[in-house]
Image (cartoon, rainbow, N blue to C red; front, top):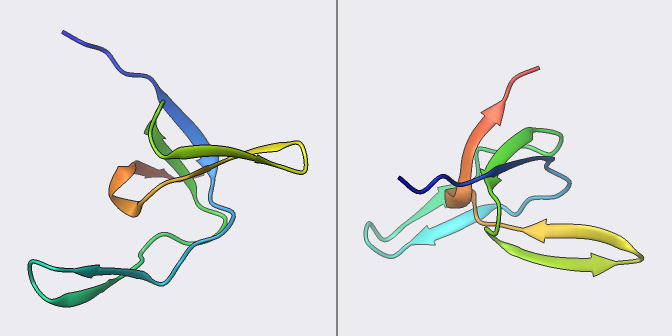
Length: 68
């Protein structure tokens, strides 16, 4: 069994949602700025800005929103 590692990070910014081509509908984002989320290590696209590390991911890549 292959085991993946998850990352827990805070949502800093988010877009309005995405268009679902299957249903021809716009799906609004449910995640909010400030949410703590889990996603798989290696998911999304990592980049550096002003010496800070960031990761962009789609909402589909979020495993869970962690409640505090």
